Every structure is written in C-alpha cells, then in structure tokens.
Length: 124
Image (cartoon, rainbow, N blue to C red; front, side, top):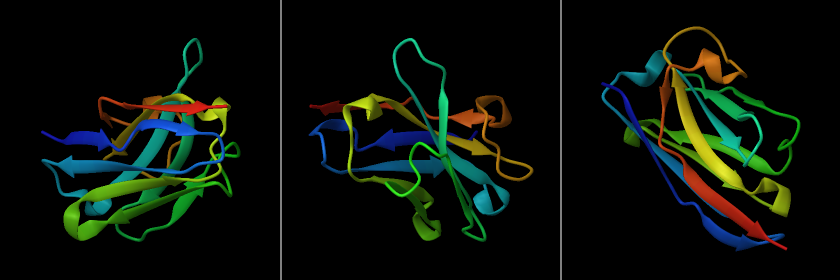
C-alpha cells in the first residue's frame, strides 16, 4: 500500500520561503511520476509540478514556474517542493501525489495516490 505523507507547511509572510516534503513508502518508485498540487478554498485542485522519479526530469505549471522547485532524494524516497517569493495567492492546502504508470500528468485524475495535504498560509 503506497503511502504519501506531506510535511513542512505553515504560516509565512509574503516574499518568504517554505520547503515542503513528501515521504513515500510502500512501493517501488523507480517508474513513478510524483507531483505537487494545491487547492485553495472554493477552487479546483491545481497542478504545480511533477518529477519522473528515475530520470529526474521535471514539469512545471505556469503559476509557479521560476518560483517553485521540485526535487527528490531517491535514497530516502522523499520529494521536496522549495517555494520562494511566496504570495498571499499561494495560500492553499498542498498535496503530493503519485502516478504509478505513464508520463507526467497535469490533472488530478491522472494520479492514483495522494497524501493528506499540508496547509500553507501566506500573510500580506
């Protein structure tokens, strides 16, 4: 049973930074694609970025390109999201997700495993 556990959320001032982690367990992730999404109140879940676990290639959504960086530590089965230049509009619950087949997906329905989410609040 694949499990994903996010951590690192919190309250930060506008212009600040946070680093989220996603610890993965219960699977062999070499063929997986793993990604980050977020969901603000009243809005749809939004794709942020994704990474091929084995090759490390990355894909970013337009809203975070240049500010957020996705990475992973294969030895620790952990994925990271470094978020810089945070804005109040980045306030949301952030989710990590895993897709056990295929290439990078940018919609929630393309991922078959999800973490419980971690709250990020950016104050102005």
